[in-house]
Image (cartoon, rainbow, N blue to C red; front, top):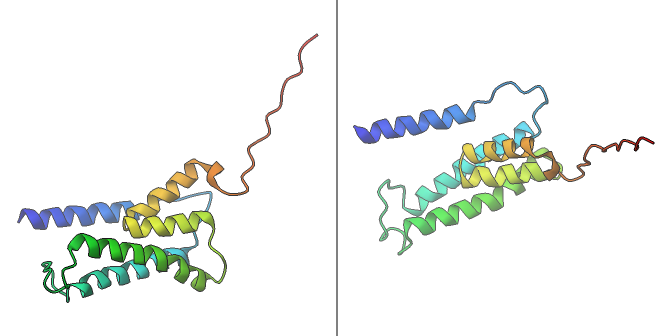
Length: 143
């Protein structure tokens, strides 16, 4: 029973973080990139379970001696490699630096990772390439 409650609480938190409020500035990540992140993440999760022959309980005998941590790392790195490639093909242009980092973070920590990186970029515009800080005007000394 406690396990079910924990799973429901985790799902609730994931959906709460996935919901975004209104943004007057506009979204800086193409929505198609978000869709690709969800698709590649689902494929990565499917690959993880396919390694264990679709069993929920991990059995090293099924995987030829590969542990659960190794399979997790393998599918995460595969997701981080495939997601930017698929995103570039889908949107038919090179990814921005922000989109590439959001994509990698979405593979590392599903749902929340990409959101956190996007918010970090909003708080630090100097991270964007081509950022020019506002010009500081100096007052002339009074004579």
